[in-house]
Length: 166
Image (cartoon, rainbow, N blue to C red; front, side, top):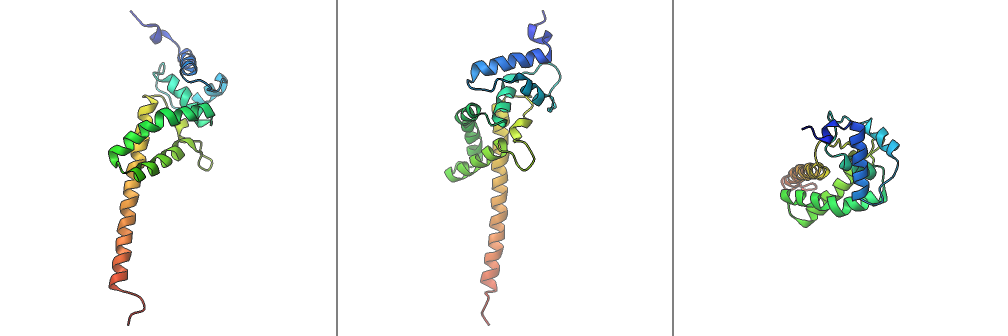
């Protein structure tokens, strides 16, 4: 027997995801045509989307919908926090990385749209945010190591070759 989801057109599946997202999260924008325009800019998997409600939610976050951003903070920031803490549980490190995750995913940079708008629905949005958080955390670790190496080199140079001594 073929399930009704398999027989649904992608547009019908997105509409169902739209309805599901609006039932799940209150306050999302109500312009399906604007969402459909956004969908046309994505490289989506073939067939009906498995995470259409997450696509709607990500789009709402990316366009700055206040309700979606509050929900992101309440539900997805803890996901990012746990992912970052697996890299380094230091509170300052986690806070710094969380701020970078928020900035990277939710803020436009130059002419580029917020990165959350690139979410394509191939997996759960929470997993996508978790991966982004780990990438940010690892990037901070690498930056810190490079900065520490530069600081050590400068310190060594200052100790070995102090200026003003003859």
